[in-house]
Length: 372
Image (cartoon, rainbow, N blue to C red; front, side, top):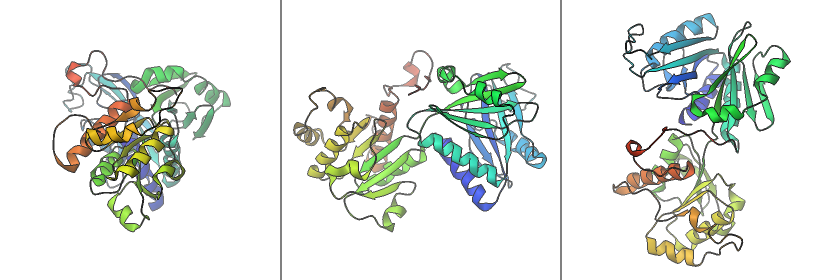
């Protein structure tokens, strides 16, 4: 997610500046890897990069390959196979025991801008989507098709119409594959698939100094952050909450009229005004927000919840989505530590994780994304 958002920003910047770039994308993974299929790195002509495809093991080598791809103007797939103990051929000392295929695409400004729009649509969708990419074909590689539900948007040359139809006909297997992705052969064409999770929408109700680190951390994670203030929005909001959108909502009870709230929305209520916070909580619960965190002492929140109406059809519908006091118990003092605890809890709750130690986890570290 983080990589996707930063890549979109980088692609748009390149398009606006009239700059050609090379995009490196992990398209196949076998065995262990730092990043799953869909991890991306943007390489500029000056050698600077945006994003990561590994933990730093492959980036410098890929930058060298990207220079060649930029000069040739032809896409290619670079393979790193470290399943043997000795990865001396690469001279990288990876020790990851995995195979990674990375697609390198030269993108002139117009293509960079269009691919940015394609990725941004996936991040802005209300459900996970599938991105299909041709990685081997007689006519060349690098064509993309974004599949969101029944809607398909393509870029590049897919050759015969039957190729695109077959490539986009069934995505159930792709969702089951998760971060390892999937590669299919369609005649002489190979298509790599990845699941793109939409960006998490986070609403922060409040605009005090303690909102700043929370908005910053969430934005750096690639979340779509909205800061809600009961006062008029000015340029100061833009400067203070960089990477976030600020909106005015003078009546907290009408929050759903000021910002979009969906069953995917996470929200943190922290205006430090009990009546306003109570109205925010009720509006969020009534709109079925997935996560509602409330900053403040337990007694304060219990007083607020005592006044909260429950839905007759489901008495627990309100309480089980309210996290108060907000945040995981990770220790630390001050706004930054509190923001970190909140971010960690939101991530755990939205991904249906316990927030425990990975060393105690049984089974795979990563689970596939649900289709809906």
